[in-house]
Amino acid sequence: MFHGVLVTNAFLRTDKFVEHYEWLKEAAEQYDIALSLLENTDLLCLIPGKGDLFVPKELEKVVSEVDFVLFWDKDVPYGKLLQDICKKKKVPMFNSIEAIAACDNKMETYRILWEWNMTQNDSERIPLIPTIAAPMTYANIGYTKLDFLDKVIETLEFPMIIKECFGSFGMQVYIARDKEDLIRYTKKLGGKPFLYQQMIQKSTGKDVRIQVVGGKVVASMYRYSENGDFRANITNGGSMKCYTPSQAECELAVRTTKALGLDFAGVDLLFANGTKHGANVVCEVNSNAHFKNIFQCTNVNVADHIMHYIKDALVKNEH
Image 1 (tube, helix red, strand yellow):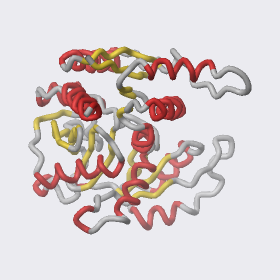
Image 2: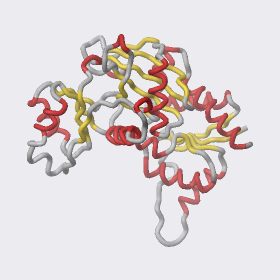
Image 3: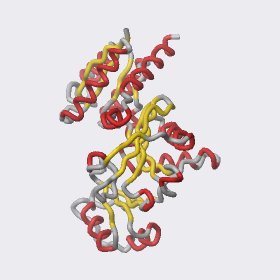
Image 4: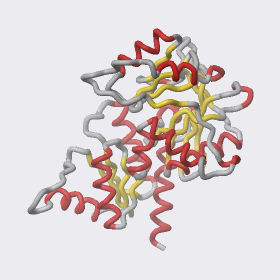
């Protein structure tokens, strides 16, 4: 029997999150894996001064007693410290903290995918949405001049999308239909990292979620809005139905996870040329994608695939 630890956030304890943790534990049992829970408050991320390295030693003890770590959080400093200990003990961590951090920050996701494109031939490049990072300012200062918005408008045109770099479930995504909207959201978000993005109008209220595990597509669904919302997220009232992705869509999703160094992820694709031509541009990538909706839609339990992938990796490491 293998033993693993599932690292979660102590403050995400709503039924929606706890249910996913239980699904992962139940899936682990099917593969003869004992999965214990570790919250990010159980052992604090301490960088000691002089003297005893007590807390890192405690983390080191936890890592020494398991065969793998499944990091289901976005606490990057904690994850980096834990991953350093994992490397020291030669214990694998899924996903890597670099991959999680890259997905958590939407601008960083695009930067890394652009970096990937610079090293690939045409067939391996990943289609991206034209995107501009909002210039950094400070919360107590805000944007004292807005002339840079003229270049944003010239490049992206209206309507355009504005996204906070850190956000989930489509909750920090806005649409600017004119300059007045653009100025209002820019002022509102001053002090936060955010970006401006061209709106893929033929994909308004429509997208595809493709779940990739271990370089293979295991499930996918088509999400669509019936209430006029430009977002397709189920949390915002969107609907879903089964979707059979084309080979090109599968290859794009898998290539995207490869570029970001992910073991598993949910990849969201948009229809740049309309639904008749398939989803062909990357919108976002979710390293710790929730999988209840896709299970309800497809009857595919992504947790099973994740634990199967981890079990295979552990067995290979033994030989």
